[in-house]
Image (cartoon, rainbow, N blue to C red; front, side, top):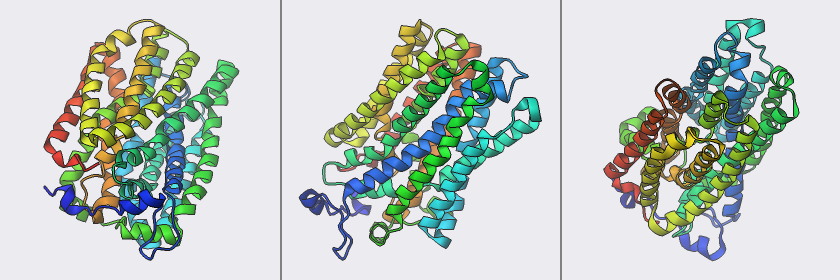
Length: 446
C-alpha cells in the first residue's frame, strides 16, 4: 500500500500562511481560501436541505399519503425502503456525470446535476397520493427518489478536495471540516421549515398540501447554490488550480483497478459516523412519533438545537484533528460512538427528557465525528485519482453506512427491541476501528 507521504506532494503552505491566498502556477489572480469555503458550504447545504426534506417527509408525510393502506409502522418502513434508493443510485450518478464532465466540462456537468436534483425534488411536491393513483403513486415517488440519487452523485465539484489539498500546514483538519458544515446547516433549515408548517397548519391541511412547500423551496435553493458554485468552478483561475492539483475525472474502471482498496477502506473508515448520521436525525423522529411519547413539534425543536450543537462539534473537530491527527480523532470518536450505543436503549425507552438527551448527545458525537469523515475518504488516493476517488468512496460510505440505517434501526427496534439499535451502532464503530487499523496511512501529516 502506498503511503501518503510518497504519493502526495505537499501544498505550498508557506504562501497560504503568509497571505492566506491560493495562487495559480503563473502567480496571477489570487484566490482566497475563504471563497472556496463559502462555495463548499453553500453547495453542500443546498444538497443536504434536499436530503433532509425528503428524510423528514418519509416520517411525517409519506406513510399517510403513499401508504395509507398499511399500518403506520409498516408504512414508515416502506417509506424508508424508498429513502434508500437515492443512496443506491449515487454511484451510478457519479459514473454518468464523470463521463459527462470529460465530454462537456465541469460547469455543464454541475448545471445538469443540480437542475436534475431540483427537478426531481420539486416534482415530488406535485405527486398525487395513493388515494388518487394507487400503486402508481408509489412507483413515481420511487423513480423521483432514484433520480435524486443520480443527481447527488453528479453534484460533486471537487471543491472540498481542493480546499483540503491547499490547506495551510497544521490546519488540514480545520479545512477538511469546512465542507461538512453543510450537513447541519441544511438539516436546521429543513427541520425549521417543517416545524413551522406542522405547527401552523391543521393535520389535514399539512398532509393535503402543507408538506409540499419544502419541496418547492428546494428548487429555488438549488438555483441559488448553482450560481454560487458556478462562480467558482468555471473561472479560469479555479480551473487552472483544479488542473494543477490533478482534480480531474478519470475512468472509474481505471480507478477501481488501480486503487480499489482505497475505496473499500475509505468507505469503512468513516462507517461509525455515517451510521450515526441517520440514527440521530431520521430515526428518532420516527421512533418517537410511532411511540407517541412526545409531540413531533417538540422533537423537531430539540433536533434543531442538536443541529447547532453539531456545528459546534464540527468546528471543534477541526481543532482536535489538527492537534492529534485525523486518524486518532476518527478512532477516538468511533470508540465514543460505541460507548454511546450502549446507553441508546435506556435513553430512547425513557421519557421525553431522556429521549432529548439521546438526540443532543448524538448530535454532539455526530458533529465531532462527521467533521473529519471527509478526510477518511480522500486522504489515501494518488493525486490523479483523488477527484473521482473522493466522490466514489463517499458514495459507498453513504450506501454501506447510512442508506439502510433508518430502515434497519426502526425494523429491528420495533420487532425485537432497542438492544438491536445498540448492536447496529456498535458494528459501525467496530468496522471503523478495523479499517483504521488496516489503513494506517490515514494518519496523514497534519
